Length: 183
Image (tube, rainbow, N blue to C red; front, side, top):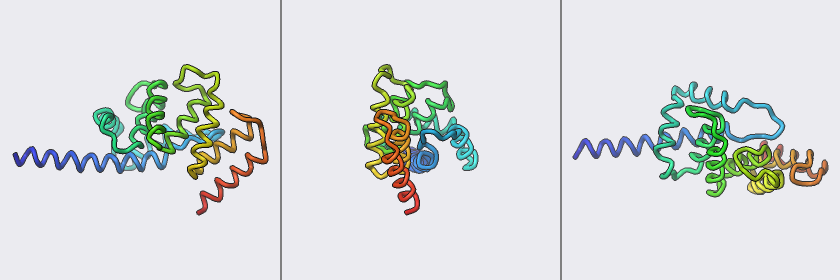
């Protein structure tokens, strides 16, 4: 009985540690910004290595606990693992599915990732109206005061993605994102 109690305690502590790790990873590495060439996979792998962790352990924990996520960032990170092919084959459909779960849970990073998927036709079958949907998701993230959402919304206005080109609005959103970042 004492052994079983200790195992449960260790699992809870382990879950809390993993949730902290997942939150840190997502906050630091998952905001996809349109027009920027960033190697997100390498950023994630470097962060994991720098913190003496391993990708297999994190991936296995995400898979084992996917139906018990109390943390919507877990959906984002699992989506990143599928999108980037970390500890699994690249699977854009599964990445899209997990980003959508995160967004539906109110996760702003998940909303941004979903907007990115729609803009680039990743993981969804209906790409005909995807650019408008991308704009809508970025707009939603921007209204949630996400700097990344604001930058991506500005990019949409600048390039006519899901909306008419409008440099005035693009610059307004770029400016708002800089103000937000400095606060």
